[in-house]
Length: 224
Image 1 (tube, one colour):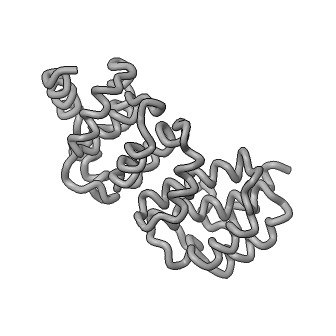
Image 2: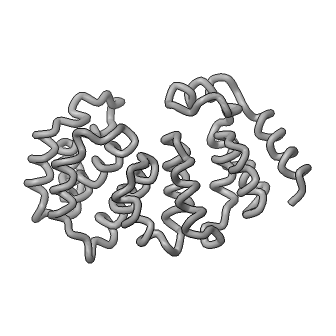
């Protein structure tokens, strides 16, 4: 991969940027290093470029948000070491970027369980967000070996004081336990009621509130 390929790719991204998307990302905490490329256009560009691990790493190192979003779609997760994963997770300090990285890269990494356990006790908010994100997936799909009662203890004692990036994914875990594990549903709802987190969160018509008691009851109703 040459410098020319990187520069050409950045030029393509810059040409796709628009002020509306840029303003939206900045409103949500993206900072100034971005072009404002709509996510759909990033997906289309990734489809043209196809998987390219070397280019992906070069794009990531620019620090540009759009370049990093594109990198996520080009990268080969199994070619990243655990140390590289840890470094990249901590560098993804914008929620949309972090969630893309968690969905497309972290969840497909061969060492994700060891990293999950490490990140669950991390002081870095973006590493902790990744840890809770992986835990949420396990709660829903592979809960064997998880101590759900202990997780509820942590959520009850830590969630109220957690910083926003972490609190959001902790809430997914709380709701997930209530939705997928009936024996813990009553306690999960009680914790959600007592904490009151996202009780007044604005939602569009037809969407389900992220307030855990409402979310749990609605998803259980749909499954009935």
